[in-house]
Length: 236
Image (cartoon, rainbow, N blue to C red; front, side):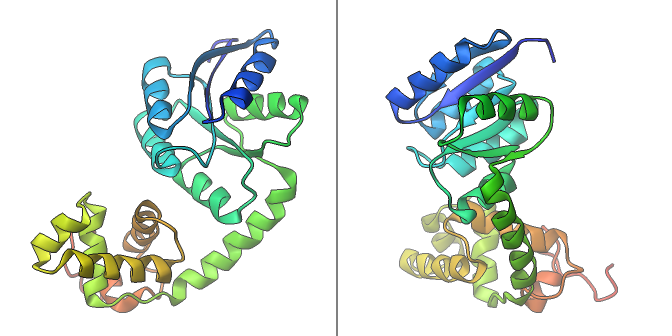
């Protein structure tokens, strides 16, 4: 990484975005290379400018978590620091799980933000201190709770198709069910997995598919590989 840290800023509040931009431009080794106000803008800025650090809000037009996941997969050199008013542990967990390297609240001081950006640019993780302990507790609770989740055979079928990128309508056609029925199954899946959207549901269930040594989430999930093929109990 060069001595200059390139930064992208994505927030749907222009006044705040401009304020952060002006503050960061005063830092000698910081260069703001792009600004935007939506998840789609974040994708474009990451692809076009390849910033060292991309500041992103959680709540803005589009699916921020999906954008984080896509950027992390396609542009791993772009480090993402969420800058948001959301103190939700679920939001923080979802962002970090999707690939963000940091989670900072907008009440952070200018000096703290600069340090957070430097940490993230250097490959370290930054989490607003008062959220850190809560987040750790949430991780531990989640690790225990996820072992108790059980999906029915039909729910598993539906989430498998959704994980391939199919819409509810496409899944309904493939499984010869009504679109409303698919939506019902997805609602059940998200409730059981304690997630808020399809992206989080797919991410959560893939962890179980890829870690079949973990008990729970119904035997069917443990005995199938990522292609849906049945695996023998001896792991072959």
